[in-house]
Every structure is written in structure tokens, then in C-alpha cells.
Length: 201
Image 1: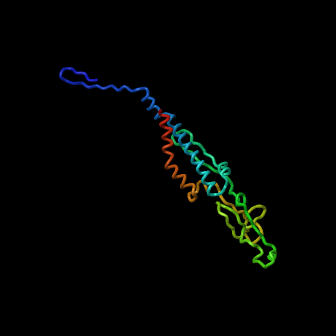
Image 2: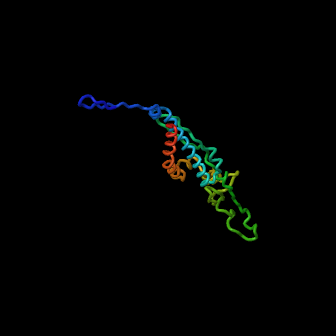
Image 3: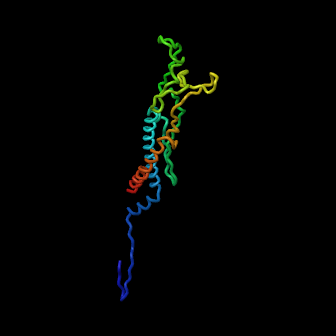
């Protein structure tokens, strides 16, 4: 508003703000933003879990149902500092469980009509781990497990394992970790921002 008095000029201004703008400012400072941030973070974590389960199952050969059943999301709660986590808990998976082990012992070298090499015709039990079929030198099958002797005595026997799901999920040297980090860089900020903008209306 401009008013003139005599030869001087007086300028005054008055700011009228809308209720929509006031709501916008309140939302920036209120719990709605924290809730939106938590929703975006948790949504990202759920997608990270889904992708991790698929990747781990693909390169270990452990069934997807087993990996998914042992992997969960610990959701973030709205607050100043929010953390969502993906956790997996399982025992070391014995090689025999999904590896279809085979161990052939030739107790009679003359069984095929001609003398053949050592009594045991295999260097070790054969099994599949991480989608690769191979022999494990010195290993054999006992009580349904692929085992090796740890001493010169007959016992104790060590059960050979394949994947440890916790390592496959979080160990930096395993393929899942760099893939998950790339997805964080690509997805997290955009996903959280989308929820924030939706909350702002």
C-alpha cells in the first residue's frame, strides 16, 4: 500500500499469508514429515530385502523360500534419527542339504573284471555349492552329511557347509553388498522425497 502526504512519500507493506502456506510451514516442522520419512525409508528397506533375497538365492543355489523365510526388515520409527535394517538369521547350511552329494566307494577294485586304481574311486565326495558341481578332496558322506576328518583319528568329523546367509547378506566381499549400495544411491533419496512431497500436499 502506498500513501502520499505532502511532498514526502511513505511506503508501507503488509503480508497476507494463506492458510495453505501456514499448513505447509507447520508440516515442515511437525510429525508428518518424520512419518513420511519413515514410510519412505521402510519402503526402500522392503525393496532392498526383496532384491537381496533374489540375489542370494541366485548365486548360492539356496532356495528362495529358505532365504526369504530367514530374512526380515526391522522397520524405522518416526524420529529425529531413523534406521531401518535388514536382518537374516540362520545356521550355516550343510553342503548336503541342497548339494545332492554323491560319494562312490569301490570296495572291490576287480568288480569290473580288471584291476582299477585305489580302493576309493573318488578323490572326495561330490556336491553342488554356489551352483557349482565339484569334488571335495578328502570328504566323504556319513549319516547323510558331507564330512572330512580333522585328525588322523576316525573322529571327530567336520560337517562341510556352504552358504552362511548372514555373510551373504552383509559381508562386503560378497556380491550382495555392492549391489545393495548401488541401489541405495539410486533409490533411497527419491523414494523418501516422494513420500515427503505427498505429505506436503
